[in-house]
Length: 111
Length: 113
Image 1 (cartoon, rainbow over the protein chains, first blue to last red):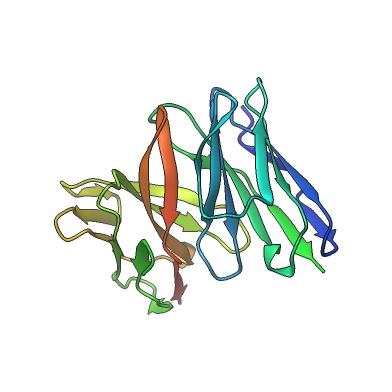
Image 2 (spheres, one colour; image 1 turned 135 degrees about the vertical axis):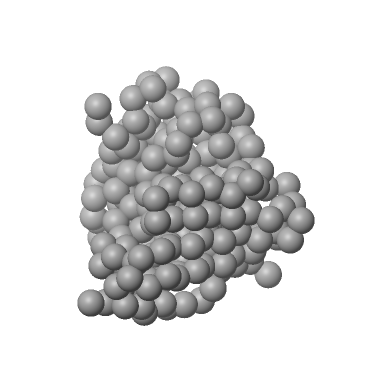
């Protein structure tokens, strides 16, 4: 049983570019959340998707958007990249009242 | 003020020591609480949930005081393998699953021989 899988694992982008990160939740999980973790900080909640809708959103600008597909997989899109967007992006999946599992993350470097 | 605040650390302890981490949260609407462990450049992994009655898992004991909005983690008989960053987490409700997780900044623990 595969856990939460994320792609790509590492990527480098230039300021102003756009990036798409992908996440496949653990089998049986229907809820996907995205987090940003800057160096030396705890993860910060970006948003959560359930039944293909954004259910909760953290304090992130509209440059951060997402999508959930019918198979529960999800994408995180970031437009107009800034240097400060460099971070580890974590996807977490869960099912009703069950443990939340994190993927290994996507390391984004903006230069 | 951050929603979840932890001891700044870092903690550097010898094997066999007992170490305690403290955490406070400011959102009284938080419903569930956890300690996560994160190894260097890895994803966070659930260490244990935290209940008001207190709970123990081997060498680890977690406590929650809702009145004080305070959470703690005690590690007894520290092992080298306990070296990691420990993250205090508060969760609200969201749909049918746990909603937003709010993490503290993490406390680095190094256990040395």
